[in-house]
Image 1 (cartoon, helix red, strand yellow):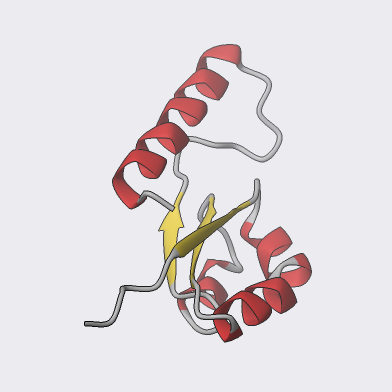
Image 2 (cartoon, rainbow, N blue to C red; image 1 turned 180 degrees about the horizontal axis):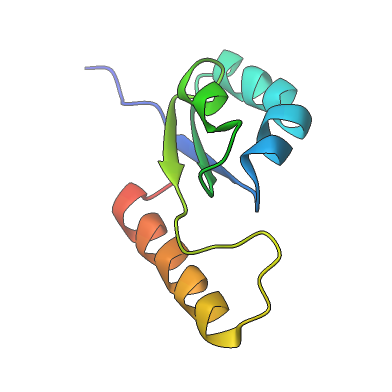
Length: 89
């Protein structure tokens, strides 16, 4: 019986960062048999995270790229923790 592929989550504060700086890493990880999960706030580049080399895209809705509100930052950290619990990368 074949084992399911291991998952790796690539996380960034904008979808633009993942598209421009982590696409080649995602390609290399997929070639090695990993399932590559993209986690970033929704934005103009989010649609690009829905296709290869990324396996799935999960919006990080509570994070604001330039946030300065400590309460919202805490909520964003809690949301990321919850995503990790669900996805188990």
